Length: 320
Image 1: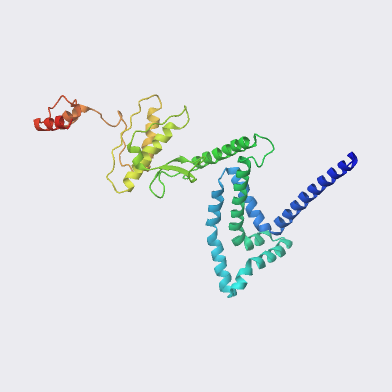
Image 2: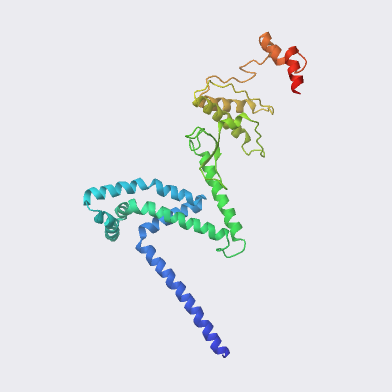
């Protein structure tokens, strides 16, 4: 084979590949235009998931929430047509009718006509496309550079952070308790190895153990503590238990200590607390006003006073 023949063969193969690829894209474009209701719903869901940093399950949940609309549509068509064959073909008839409405420039009516079926199906398809996009980028199947997975993850992290911050700042978007009585600590940025939920929550019993909150200045440690106090108080009282006693000591102090105390008071009042006193302005804290018996128990040094009964001491020695 001469060089000229090899060049012609290479050019022919390149043209064939490009023609097949172009033909495939033309088919996809024609199908997307033909199924324009599904295309619009899927594209809207895909774009929202990308901009908000949602996982694919968020779109699938939205599709499930839209299914009652589809069920109502199917029931209405069944009552009107009274034949299951006609009910099954009703979406096709509505789709053809919607083309006529589009030609008459009645886009709103056309969208409402096909929405009961197009919205849940389109959102489900959008979730599948978004799941494939995440899989393709993270595994290296997609992307123009080797750093594409890292850049994609960093971009999505920024989107997720912006979404979580917007949810926290929106009034009433992050309640103190979930429907199951869990304490809400804040909005979720990303879930790894767990089911994604809009907010992160913990059990009230978890606050009965030692807790440590670590963070840089201005990261929200004080706000988190206030939310945990109010959430714990609301969770305990929601179960019908007696109102708990909550004592908080601000060891840092500072000129803004009373401002934080007043914020805490308002938050606890909103959680159901009847009386919140701030020391030393409104409450006394003195050990010497306790009854003698309580004061003796409080000041007792273990192992020194009062001496344990002899029989109990012998029992402990035998156990040791």
